[in-house]
Length: 248
Image (tube, rainbow, N blue to C red; front, side):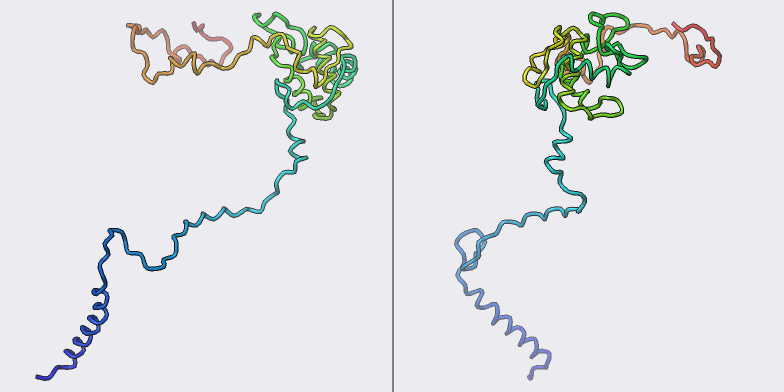
């Protein structure tokens, strides 16, 4: 019986498959359990690093001189102090010309402007005077504030020597130094201690009050009865008139 063209085509395809698969089946089996490696395989390469984010092309890096102009903070340990010096007498002249209009000739404050001197021993009073001599903890705060923000309306116009002189004069006004010839400089700055420095301490609530931070509220020894003595709608706590019922 002769083969049909369709049968002949199938037979030819089967023969081609055997010709291709036969050599692969004849290869020796691998003895190891890992994947077979082709001969002379190239070493594996590390994955490519992610591409850096493209720059926006806006602005430029600040120059060292520009950073220095902004970095004017002064710390209690003296870091940031510029070289310089100034005496109490020099500070007196500067204070009368640049500061007395607001703070008074002797730092007593004019009108509602801040008082800078006096107030020692008043911190427990009903109206304490929180001045440099009575309250402030560090002399660096005085220097930094003058250097950064004074005189009012013309901030950062003072030279370092002038700031040292003004700071020395404020020490004199607060009886912290007694000599009008006292000279304050970057060399002796940290040796000056303000009277109230020892009354300041680090915020210790994380340790001293941590016991009160429990998530579960205390439900012991609670008051057995709660009596409502009044309601806001009855007491009229925000009256339209000038008189209202007394609220205890």
